[in-house]
Length: 165
Ligand SMILES: [Zn+2]
Image (cartoon, rainbow, N blue to C red; front, side):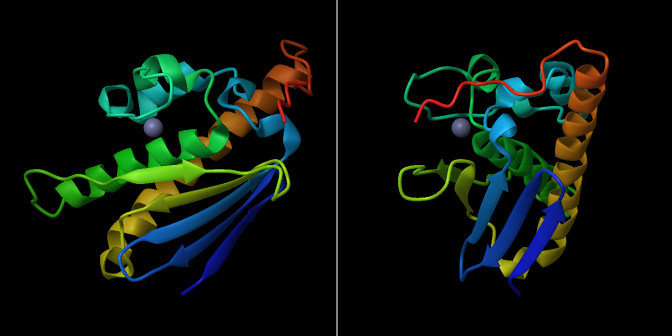
């Protein structure tokens, strides 16, 4: 059930495993970091309601709200998807839900912009995954549209040069 989602600015491969799903997200160089998205915090606040109260284990020990503005786009994708997965599962009447994820990248071995994200949702939760993924892509695509608008209105420059390789 391997599948690929194509957008002009990124590509997402979805690879269901036995107990997890692997996502390979490849973004264009100007979208490597969440700081590429000018409407990030307001969009997340409005559309991904609990995202700022999630647990996030990052090297700096930052809360996600602090981490999010400087984080990698793959890590942002992971957290949005985790929230929507929980939302969807709650609709089935579960009282407590939890999903875990991990985002990794190695831009010396793979090309910059490739993120490998592993989430503990499996294909026996296909409905939940499909719904959550579609909501996640809506949010990401909205962030990209907002960015285009800001570039067009010259509020931000099209390329942010901060490739720390
Ligand atoms: Zn995290």
